[in-house]
Amino acid sequence: MGGSCRPEATAARRFIVTRRQSMGGRRAAVFTVFSTVFSAAPSIIPAAAFAGLYTAGCVTFGVASGLAFGLAFAVAFRTALKTASSGALRAALSLALALGTLASAPGTAFAGGAVADTPGVRPAVPVPPGAARGANGGIPGFHAAPAVPSYASGTTAGGPVRTQPARMPFYVATRGNLTIYLLGTLHVGDPVDYPAGQPFRPPILAALAASPILALELSPDDLLVSQDDVSKYGVCKRPCLPGLLPDPLWQKLEARMRGNPEALAEIRKMRPWLASLLVETYDSLSAGLQTEYGTEAQLQNVFLRWKGRRIVGLETLSEQMRAFTNLSLAQQREMLAQDLAQTPAQNVSDVQTLLRLWRVGDADAIAAWESARTEKLSHDARVAASVDNRIVYERNRRFVSRMQQYVAPNKPLFVAVGALHLGGPKGVLQLLRQRGFNVDPG
Image (cartoon, rainbow, N blue to C red; front, side, top):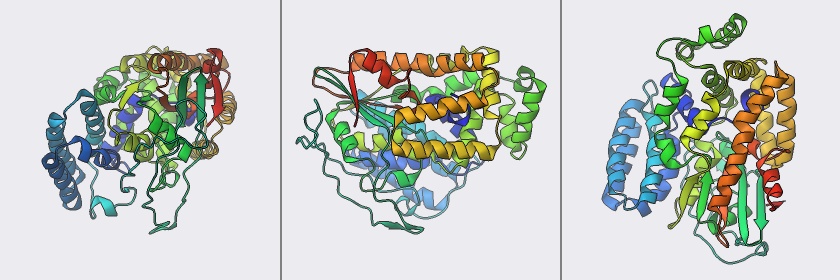
């Protein structure tokens, strides 16, 4: 699966966004921290600690630079982390702290008012875990959607906003008394897809409320330590990329990054697989998508409000890293060559097409479109197929195996993975069918 729409490593994506913001990126991902953590903080942080965190964030946010805010946020949040009363809560806080480090990157200045008045930041959605069965209650573990009070006024400073959430690829897999809910995600997104009063469709919210476990590609604990690992395996001590690429490919990459000398200096030190993901990330952000509106962040904004829940990973950080670091040089070059086969405008157009397909919610249609795109962009079909096998299909098989470890009778599992992992003959949905599950659209 090629070019800027390839399912990227979660850890590598986070690392790249951090680097991008340290080079003067367009927007700080600290908003993710506010939307995710502040929704959960009152129930998991003692009042005094939360008050200190809120004051350090909101007061500093309005008057200081991004660097000062990031440092104040980190200090206050580390204090809150120490007061968390259980391992699960500490894991949730650790995830938010990992996201919060993005805010302390130098070169990004903040100005303006309090968080509540900041574009892109909305009040947390209070979604009490309802248990009553509704029209879809015949599915094991499926409950009626929780009541969701709406905070949306229907307008913003820019005009009318969408009042209904995106459809998104959502499926229900059942086998006897086992139920797995599957949501195809985008790791960066558009705020219009998550209305403030109801960020997800009622069936998705109901499934989330019915599930004691939320399974993501990586666990919060792994995300906390991911930056060092990505740097260790993806960045050289000295500029190495020009020597690892054929001259024509390096020249094409150099021309692509010429307008951003800071980014070009950074990419010189990256191995080809990480350089490829950097180009993909730039294209996604250039398409207007934002890290704080990735589906996983929005899911946690709801899920972390409920007690007795936990978030797990379907693969470990080392497993995810090995999917990329074990690629041969030829495979890494193929990845990068696909990213550079089109102009930036063409790549942005493809990202927007993927977003439209995701909004429709048909995983097989997404997979078919991406397969055709890869075929068009690949330089060596055999090598391209081997890349897809390593970073998509092998991981799909691992995901499904881990799902079966986490799901339990009458205890549904909610799974959220990149949308490009779900559909097609080697996708997660088909693998579940092969293991005896009935899979239906949700």
